[in-house]
Length: 85
Image (cartoon, rainbow, N blue to C red; front, side, top):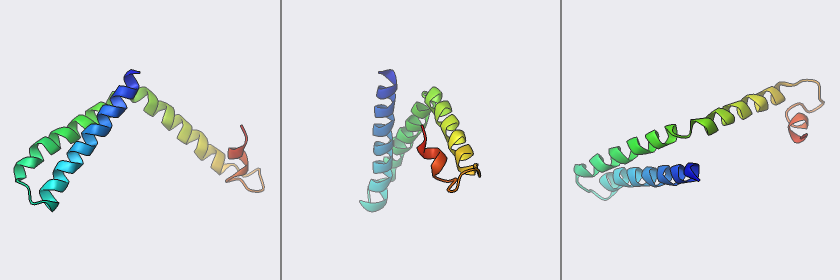
């Protein structure tokens, strides 16, 4: 449950930060809009560091997928081994 809250918080921080930059560039808002925008993007990056366990799992999955693609023992090595479970 905490991980879901972190993902939601990170998503909201990213949207807020990007909106602040967009408003400054496209809507001719004051450069002061950049201050909360930068703070939101820093919060976004920090929140993503709180979910390191999932990142390690993702990196392992990526390595397994790369190994699967590099196998040359199948007629279609890029697809055959990845379809098996």
